[in-house]
Image 1 (spheres, rainbow, N blue to C red):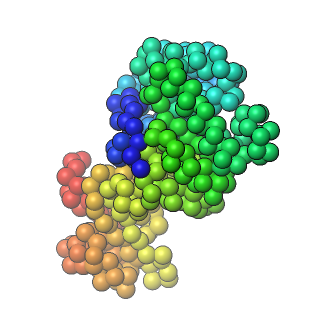
Image 2: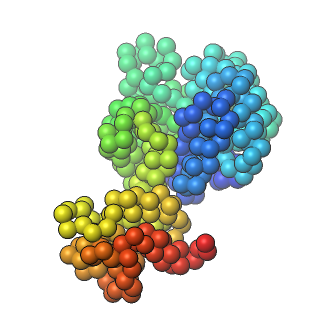
Length: 351
């Protein structure tokens, strides 16, 4: 479903542009050293938009320093309850401010934020969460139903449009992946504003990945979702890797595809370690390349013959192969560095 185009920093979102991968820092924002380090890691993993919570004045100061350090990276200031911090974040260079109007403290404060965003030509993310639904809608629907979440979002969209403001995206989230998908489908059928999608509070790594995939795949396959976040109780870099993998698996973004065997007693190289490092280093590259990491000659060039490039373990050695044909034999200790050289060559990257 085609949505309107908005700008978040230098990125165009919506209207058929690529679905963007987003994540959020989990450090104490006022700890500048830890936060900038995590932002850099997120960017290196392919995170295209980074959200940073700004809970207080100390966090605001750190946010401003990060903005100065990384002028080209789209940054979102995550705000709850404080219209003052939202407005100050915009002044400090936030490309976008994320708010839940329902917990901002009333219409007047929401209007202040809209005016500040308009004045500085920035973007807004209007969030509707099952956990912060307005009291009148909870009274009307008894609990956060898909209809209630959609109605809340439409109400806030209409309010923004009445203030002659349209450079915003909407997020509708629930920890229930089925309810989450239903509410977003409903909204997309009624409104053409860009959608940020994700399953909130999805859980630890494995449950969170399963719930997020369940909740987002249905939407993405129907063309719903302009930015995504795989929310996990884990290292935020994992969210970025997972987001790219989901989009690549659905054919919505291109990139390096890592395939690897499940390993067994025949495994002769560190398949798990090599595959994970390759995934983190090359998973987001915008060029399609299938790379295979196989543990032995049984699961080697033959089973991975469709791979563009691959490596398979042997006794104290490994072989590099292209399309099933062996091109070089290397020592086991050099397996990772050698396959990396070949991948960079195919991607046109230089050391």
